[in-house]
Length: 204
Image: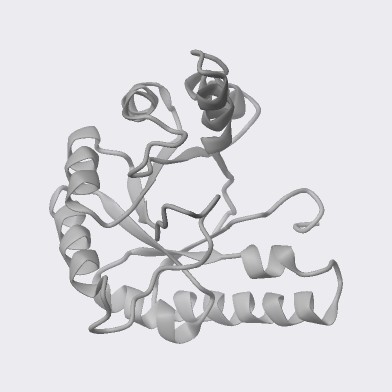
């Protein structure tokens, strides 16, 4: 499968919200990313609306020419928005009010606190014809559980690798974890994504 680059533009919106103005506009930024060759655009509509706003999501659905990926929590509110907007796919992610950015993958433990909500939202998205991805830690067991829940794609959390010192033993261990989870996803026939903290230095 040919690798594809989806650019997350959340923090263009962070600058706008901090300034209290209408610019910089993430919708304009998305267009520039696509002109530069991006295959898709990712935004996270948080429950607290700290950066991306619902207005952005609706305009992006109208203007993004490539793949539009909406990251969201597994809540009824977000499910309703997604079903109305119809992104190309939705990536379900964990959310904590106090975090600055997503800190880890979803808890997909059977019977866990979010298990019922995840199953309900995944079923609702799939019923609406929206493909579902889960943002997970790089663990083969978590990959398998994601498939059981109905995900068609998994996005592996690369933050542990990106936070490790370059070319350190820890970075080597974290890369091996990612490779193992990626192989598990391929064996199960899941589409695969990877993200969080990737930049020019750590993907070279």
